[in-house]
Structures are given as C-alpha cells and as structure tokens.
Length: 210
Image (tube, rainbow, N blue to C red; front, top):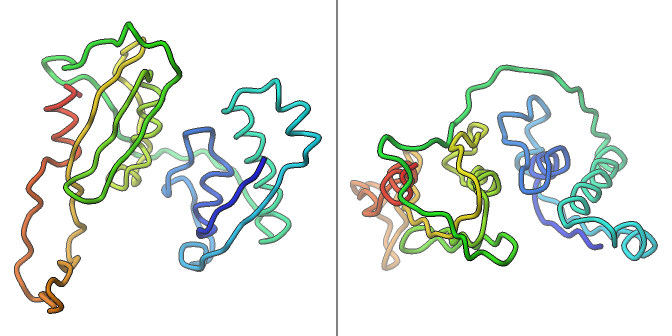
C-alpha cells in the first residue's frame, strides 16, 4: 500500500502510463519541458487501508500495481498539472526472436513457483538471473535495460512455458563518454579501452540462442 520513489517526472510518467512490468519507453513520451528529465523529486504516497485490506485482497500483484499507477496519474495531474494527449504513432521496435539455430535453453518443466528475475551490476558485467519465467515477462524486464530503452521490445520468440537461465553481458559506454579516473588521476585524454565481455545482443545470441 505504499509507493516511494526518488526520480524525475519522466520516469513517473513512464510508470504511470505503462503496465505492470512494462513501463513506457522514453520514445513513447513525446514533448514536455526539459526539466521533466533532470529535476529530481521525492514521492511518498500511501493507498488507504480500506482499499489495501478490502478490494486489493482479491487482486494479483500486477492488478494492484496497475491500480496504484492510476493513482499516480492523479498525483501527476494534481501536483504537476500534467496534461496528456494520446496519439497513435509508428515507431521502430526491437524484436526478440529465435536465432538461426534455435534456442539454447530448454523449458523448465520442474518450475513450481512464480516468476522471479534478479539482476546484478555494474561490476564485472551485468547479470540477469531468471527463474521459472515465461518469455513475455522476460521481454518486459529486458526492455528496461538501457541498451534497449530507445525502442519498444516485442517478444517474437514463440516460446511457451517457463524457463530458468542466466544472462551475462557487458554494458557498452555511449560514444564520447570519458573513462573514469583511477588512482586519483584523470585519464580523460587516454584512449578508452573496450569492455572485455560480450555486448547484450551478442550475449542473447550466444547464451540463449535469441
């Protein structure tokens, strides 16, 4: 029954107008003043006890989340004077599809619990540990990775059932980003070294066959 966040208004909008495990991508939120990307706000909200202990008792986690996001829309309208206009627009997407030789993972037929996805990073690469998940849910989570945020990710694998696997990759630095200083000295002018691990696209193909 609680919602707390320290973030910018763009992130709040992407969550409020998306769905459970599927916020909007930045390409789906057009226009708006520049400060919605830069200014940070603390949001602390509480759903009334009568709702949490009443109608929400019968709802799934996803349904409760979507209900809370409707309340977040009201907060954005009341506190930030947000005005929204919906439009249909053709945008490029990413397809998550099977590689030429097919998937390299097998269905987890022993799955006996709900989907769980945990992440680890940064450090020596980034990890996603996936347990007992369908690919639609996995695609939703994967779409939050910075490398894919420029487009909507669509699950075209056709894989059914639940799967358990690990995905490991090294995030690529955007062009022009200086290497971090080490040993108290700046190496801004030093030639950047390339990450040693696979890119996300390569990792998907080599580790999962996607």
